[in-house]
Image (tube, rainbow, N blue to C red; front, side):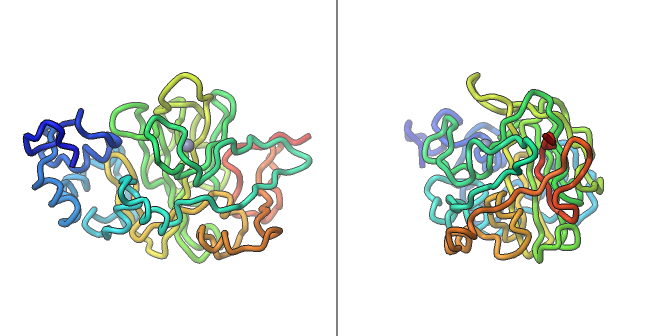
Length: 306
Ligand SMILES: [Zn+2]
């Protein structure tokens, strides 16, 4: 543990990891992590799980198969709470570079990924792996639902416990995407509170809110959408006050979604032949046309037709 002053508990200053994990473990919210709280969290399935069912990210009216943190196994927990000592578990759950290369359209201008999935994170905490792909675009550029699906969580405030500022997390069923798994898309750093609500069914291309950089530390980074995609064979998920964890969830490269077929997982992507790693992005243009017309998953930003 990080108990540098040897008093048998860990204060926030001694804790060197991200605040959302600290808060999740700190069951009695006294600002100190005790051995008992560690044990309850990592062996007992999350000390605060009962309360989390009601707390739920500030906007939690959901229908949908939302379950408690005790439904999440230790491997999934290790991967999603991103503990540095469990990076092997994170890799096992797909959090590594995939080798996929997005191919953007010739006849339209799409905001492009500048910081890919699986690279070392460029934030203030060293040794973390980037769990999504960053797509920079102008202030307030509209963000859209990437597929039909349900809004399952919203983090409306830029600061506080939310690690990625304002976020919308959607769950897409196999019927929504044509893929044989449940797909979760997390879009983040909105400039203003998202204009959708939990439990709402959206169509592909529906407006979510304006692009921004809420939750982004430092001044140098421009506004961007950090897009994280998870998949699971289970329809169930947990919403905590800082993140959504699908039961048995895996991380995938968001670019893999545009293959339109399985496999999607990172380890399978690494086994693909060179030419199979080039993946054409499906998108909607500023005239409202979808390319290709039968796409069930599109780029989160509109692409300007030439
Ligand atoms: Zn990012």
